[in-house]
Length: 88
Image (cartoon, rainbow, N blue to C red; front, side, top):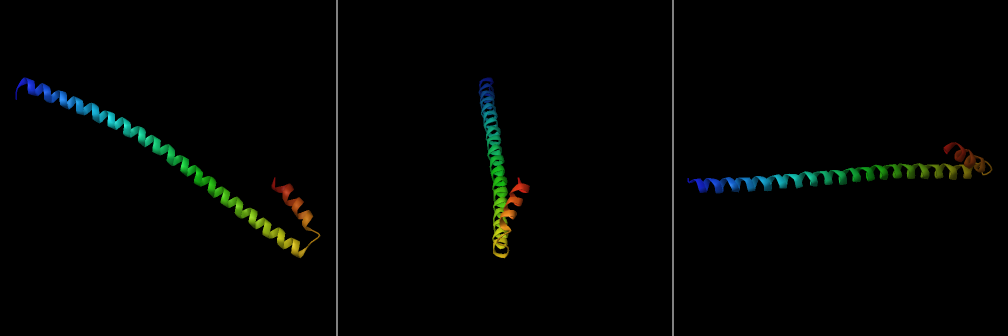
C-alpha cells in the first residue's frame, strides 16, 4: 500500500466518522423529540382519565338526586344546596 492510498483511505475514514457523528446527533435529537411527544400523550391520557372519573361522579350524583326527587320531593332543594355548598 502506497502513501497516497493510505492517505486516501484515512480521509475516507474521517469522512465516514463525521457522517456517523452527524447521524448520531440527529438520532439523539429525534429521540428527545419523541420523548417530548410521549410525555404529552401520557399527560393527555391522565387528563382523559380524570375527566372520565369526574363524569362518572357527576352521573352518580345525578342518579342520587333523581332518587331523592322520587322519594322525597320536598327535600331535594335542600340536598342540592347542601351538595353544592360542601362540594365547592
